[in-house]
Length: 192
Image (cartoon, rainbow, N blue to C red):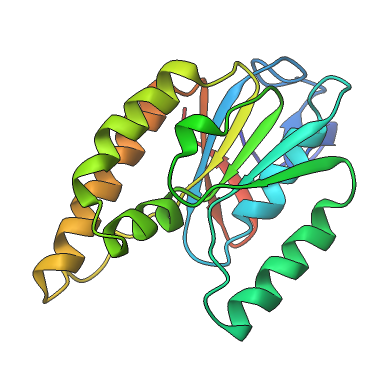
């Protein structure tokens, strides 16, 4: 839980979350399934790496769903790889995330994965792939997604279908997660 420290209260920082009076949140330091959501550039990927680095010793798997379709995306992918460093084994899987599962994993990100399915005309496959992913998800996983349904309803049918699918996928992942965090301006807020 995120809280501000008051006068006379001792606070500590644990993985960028302020905890009062030395209290540690439920599950901290244990294997957990965590879903991180929020807006674009809210700090979700950085937070996912922080949580994954707190997993018990061993290599960490980073499942990357982005496709390098232009120069800007290639630069973004390169920056993310450099940020992860050698402690993460990267597996690029833009479609079949249910086949890219392993212990101590980060999946970044659900919206890009869903986007890939829609643009490869496999929109109808997302639910089956997600169901298989959830069934096989390890106990120590951090999943990154976006909140896109907090604004204007899109004008075109494809974008509306995408928004509905992402909302449903997020709800399923949140139900399967032990913890859900909403990132706001780089600050994690515990939702579940």
